[in-house]
Amino acid sequence: MITRQLPMYRVVTDHPQLLPLFPRFNLKLGFGEKSVEQVCKDHGVNVDFFLEIANAYLDELYVPGEGLSFFSLGTVVNYILSTHNYYMDIALPGVEEKIHLLMDGSALSEKEIALVTGFFNDYKKDFLAHISQEDQHILPYVLELERQSTLERTDPEFLQKLRSYSIREFEKEHDRLETSLEHLSTLIIKYLPPFDDLQLCHQVLNDLAALVKDLVDHADVEDKVLIPRVAELEEKLLNTPFPG
Ligand SMILES: [Fe+2]
Ligand SMILES: [Fe+2]
Image 1 (tube, rainbow, N blue to C red):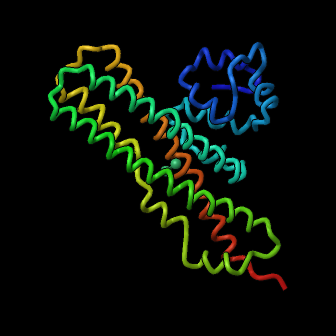
Image 2 (image 1 turned 180 degrees about the vertical axis):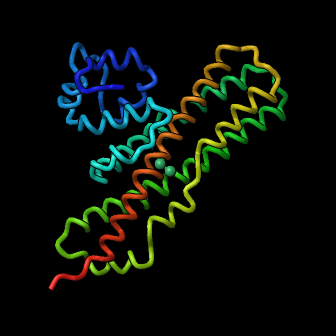
C-alpha cells in the first residue's frame, strides 16, 4: 500500500509497474528524497487522487468507487483523458512497432503475417473509434453535466436533452478493449510457429499483458466510478424542481 509519507523514489523502485501512471499526472522522474505528498504538491497534483489511482492499479482485487467518489467528475475526466492520450501516443504505437519488427524478422508465411497484421489493424480501428467516442461525446457531456449541477438553475435546453438521454445508454454499448488483445497473445503463444527472436517475442507479450492490465483498470474507472456517478447526477438534476 502506498502512503503519502513514502519517498516517491521508493514507490517507483518497489512498483515499477506504476511507471505508466506518472506521465498521466505530468510527474517526471528525478524525485530525490521527496515524499509522495511533496512531489504531488510540487506538481499541482491532488495527492489523495494519486494515491487512490496508484493503489487501485496495484491491487487486483480493488473495486474502485468508494475512495474515488470523493473527487470531482472533472478530476476523474482529466485522468481518463490523459490515460487515453497515453494509449494513443505511447502504448498502442509502441506495441504496434514491436509487432511489425517481430513479423519482419520471422519465418512466418505470408498468410500468417497477414493474419497477425490484419488482426492488429482491425483492433486499432475499434480502439480509435472507442476512444474518440469517449473524448468527443461522453467526456464533454460529463463535464457539462457537472457544470450544470453547479448552476442555480439548470439550463432548460440541457434538461430537455437529459429527458431523452442518459449515460446508461453509453454503458450498454461500452465494450471491453482488452479482450481482443488477449486473443492476440493467445495467437502468438498457442498457434503461431515459434519466433527466433525470443527476446522481442517476449517483449511483445509483456507489452500486451501490461496493456491488457491497464485497460481493465481503465474500464473499471469508467464503469464503476464514472458511469454510476454521472447517472446519479442526472437523476438529481431531473428531480430538482425549478426554483420559485
Ligand atoms: Fe476510456
Ligand atoms: Fe471506455
